[in-house]
Image 1: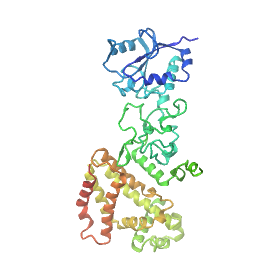
Image 2: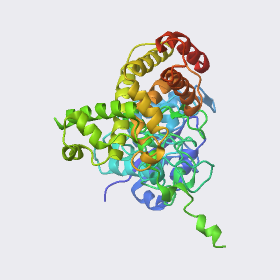
Image 3: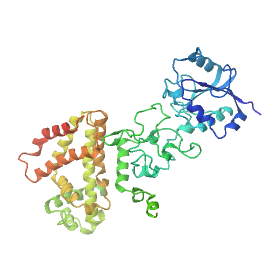
Image 4: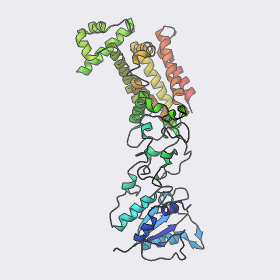
Amino acid sequence: MLSKLKIYWLDLVTCYGCSHSFLNHPEFSSFLDEFEILYHPILPFSDFEAENIDVLIIEGAVNNLKRKGIDINELLQNLIEKSKKIVAFGTCSCFGGIFGKGVECNKINIPGCPPHPEWLMYVLNMMKKGKDIKVDEYLRPVEIFSYTTHMGCIRNEYFEWKIDAEDFGSKEGCLFYYQGCQGPFTHSSCNKTLWNEVNSKPRAGTPCFGCTEPTFPKENLFKTETFMGIPANIPLGVSKRAYLTISGIAKSLKNERLSSKLFRNCDENK
Amino acid sequence: MKEAKKEQIIKTALKLFAKKGFFNTTIADIAREMGMSVGNMYNYFPSKETLAKELLIYTSRKFGEEIRKINEMQLSAKDKIKKIVELYFRKAEEEPELVDYFMRVYLSNREIFESGCEGMLCVSAFVTEIMIFFEEAVRKKELKNQDFFTAFGLFMGYIGGLAFLSKEKILPKPLKDYIDDVSENIYNALKA
């Protein structure tokens, strides 16, 4: 049997949401059969000194704070030098996110606020098997972040026909036109590998906040930015002219089935 | 080859529609004017309704192509507005049948266009370019951010109305004499 991969989890400035996301992985107990945690800030470890670190996982943003008299930046540098591989888990340690600056070193980025626990599981398992992890320009694993949040969204049919969810929380309609959804231009697999194995933000009626991108967080997350009524950000890989043409055509052709509420008969039959 | 012929038929039809009116013009009239047999004419357009729709797409594409050139120029929104007004008024003077067709046939006989030209379907080439013009001008903070149709109606309704008045011989001066004032009014109404 191969020896367990030794993991050190360092917390910089963080809300610990990334930790909570990962610790709630449904397979967490079997994870411990394969991996050994040397230190984790919210699990009961008394000593944070460690040697022979295989993977350093960093949560939170770099900020010039001291903790118990220890310069965290020094500790970070020390751990980076001692670790074979480094993973930035969460948008704060990847790009700065909410709390400060991203960690600068040779690392793999798993952004998200928080990131999906399965994304880290994938990276750690690849590392355990000694496999090469291909990354994009922002050092994100391509197997997770080549997708957009839009892919797999159950509201896609509404997107195709340009039918909006005009009210927040509506089960029907697309969230791209009014509700601020950033799914068509955000890289993630949130609608492929579902959250808690059942759902995603857009499926539940909350717009994608674009939390896996270096531009996160933007303002007005529940409102689509428009210029003269035209979305300021359009789906990836298409010119504005082409997008406006195809969306104008789709809107003009009007999908009758989706134009009125699918669930309307439920009320009428009462 | 077939496309070139189609374009010729469209141009001829436009002239006849403008002269005799849409309902008084038959496919046979257009064929005669073209020196074609009626049978051959039907190879290009199976009905007058088909021709009517193709004409709209053709007109919209022509305008769209011209506005696209303006969109791609390195000009301020104010100068682009003037270019678009110039273009529209020039077309209205030089090819009055285009504007005439749009106003008298398309806008007044929507039943012909109900199937096949729903919504913006047949005018999308033109409307898309206007959208791009507005979007870029707002992005650059030159025009005020507002609802698309509020701005579109102000711009197109205004210049379309003047072209109509000109065609009705109500305007005392030629259209081109109004370009500066009209452009300035549009800019003032839409600026940031």
